[in-house]
Image (tube, rainbow, N blue to C red; front, side, top):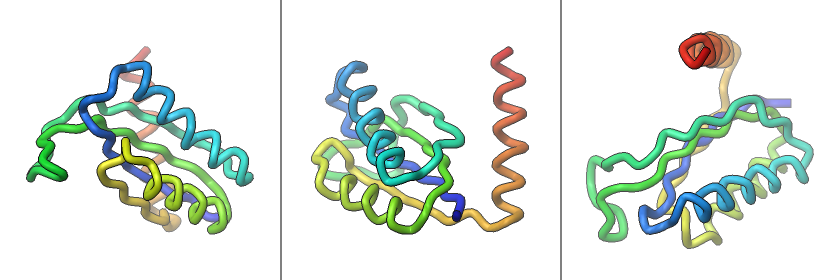
Length: 113
C-alpha cells in the first residue's frame, strides 16, 4: 500500500453543510476502494494566488490516506467529475515525507488539546 496526500479546493459558494457533504463523498469513495484514511484537515476558506474559474477564494481540504493506485484513480476521476471541486493535487509520500507528515500530525494534534 502506498501513502498519499491530496489537497483539493472547493468552490467558495458552498454552504458549510454542502462542503462537509462533498468531503464525506470523497472519503466514502476512498473507503469503498479499500483505502485507509489516516488524516483529514479542513483548512477553511483561503485566498488563492490567482483566480481560477473567476473565483479568487476557495475551501481547502487535505486528506492523507493509504491505498492502492486503483483507489487513487477512482478518487481523481470523482474530482474531475464534480463541479464543486476547482483544483486538486495528489502526491505519493515516500518514506521520509510520510515520517514528516506523521510528525506534523502529532504536533497539530497537541496544539488542539
